[in-house]
Length: 118
Image (cartoon, rainbow, N blue to C red; front, side):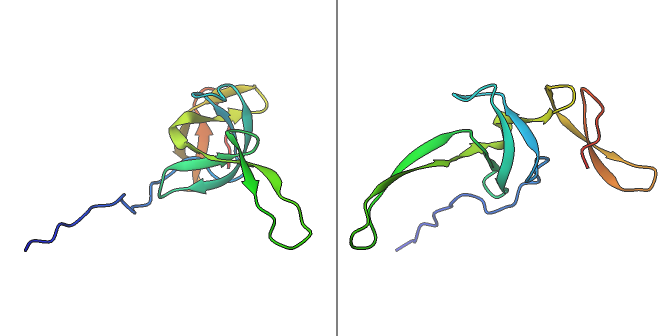
């Protein structure tokens, strides 16, 4: 009897140009045009969690006696391809390029504005 090997999602980590703390703008989906700060990155799934974007409501049952149930609103993850880095100064979203400085240090730079992020 042959056993079938079921291949699950690849656990390979994807290199992301978006990092925690970056300001991004949503470019696709129901929250298109909204901006917010990246709270978490999920590099294995190539997803990001952005503050105030893609909100989900969840009903939580009471855990202790005398406590009431509640409704919790929290951010769900977005695919990284649906967000672009956002320049606060010029108020425009842009792609990111990696540039090596004179000192030999890699830095991220916005393509449209030339603004260095790191």
